[in-house]
Each structure stands twice: as structure tokens, then as C-alpha cells.
Length: 231
Image (spheres, rainbow, N blue to C red):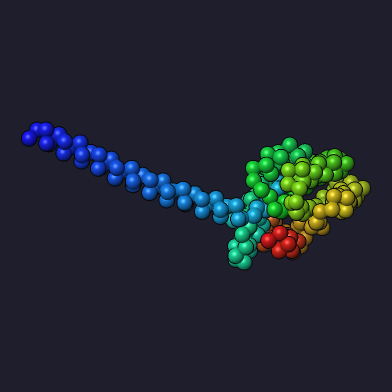
């Protein structure tokens, strides 16, 4: 009798073990399927990187209210498979941007790269020659890693208190880069926003949520055709 019980216990254990293994196999199969579907979905989604300073980062507003977040809303409403990556860092200069851009763009495929830097260079009185050199180097680095990427350069201006000569030289560097590097230029990112008190935070530099809506429309005008071309 004891022998029968022992044999029954062993058989029961084997059956339970087999059942567990079957369940584990089913779970593993389902998990693999989900991960495969997620990977396929991720691979099917194209990335847009907004690379800039506090304007891109959305200083003083909720990230969803910043122009990059508003662009994502526009894309989602159209059902297009593009993912906006906000790589804005407050205080960024073209020099610091150059030092981190490789790390940013190496992490994932990039379909469109929007470069918004130079404003802090201007506010700090950095030589336009230096700003020019850094912006060109950033574009070159991005293209080395992603040769087919679409690049949009956001033009900036500096306050008149920097002096007319400095302001003119600074403003001219963006069109010159655009022509030489064959990228798309947004003539002035803060069009219809810069200098308008009610559309900027108390610092007079960073847009309010209402200001960001206008900036988003400005950017969308130049970005939308690239998405159609790239899709």
C-alpha cells in the first residue's frame, strides 16, 4: 500500500511538473509575441528629435504645453507614426550641444532633426564665428551617424542691446549655414512671439503656453512637408 502511494505521488508530481512546464512554455510564447509586436511597432515608428535649449525644453511651462509636445499632438491627431523626442536642455550653448549631440542621436534612428541652438550664445556675447562653427559641426555629426536624416535649423535673433554689428552678424549666420549645408531654415523660431509681453513669461525670453502654440505653428509649417516626404 505504501509502495502504491509512493508511486502515485511520484506520478502526480511528474504530471504537475509537465503541466507547469507547458504553462511556462505558453507564457514564454505569449511574452515573446508581445515583445515582438512591441518591437515591430517601435521599429515602425519614426523619430523626430528636437535638439535645443530652454525654448525647446519648455522652460516655465508643462512639457505638454511646450512646442515640441504640441507638435506630437498634431502628429497623433493625424494618425502618423512619428515619435517626438524632446532633447532640449536649459542653458545649452552651441558648444555644449556639440559635446552631447552624438550621444543623443546614437541612441535611436532619427528621421528628422530640428536644431534650435544659438540663442544662449547670443545672450552671452559669444563670437558668431564660434556659434557658426559649432552649428555646422553639429549638423555634420548628425549626418555622419544618420546620413539620410532631414535637418531643420531654427533661426534666432539677439536683442538690439548687443549692438547692431553683433546682431547683424549673428542673424546672417543661419541663412549661410542653411545654404552651405543644404538644410531647411525656419527664419525666426520666435516669429510673432519674441518681444510680445503677453506671450512671454516675466523674464521676457521664454514663451507662455499661448506663445508656445504660436511657435508650434511656425515649426509645423516647415516640419509637416518633411514628414510627408519621409513617411
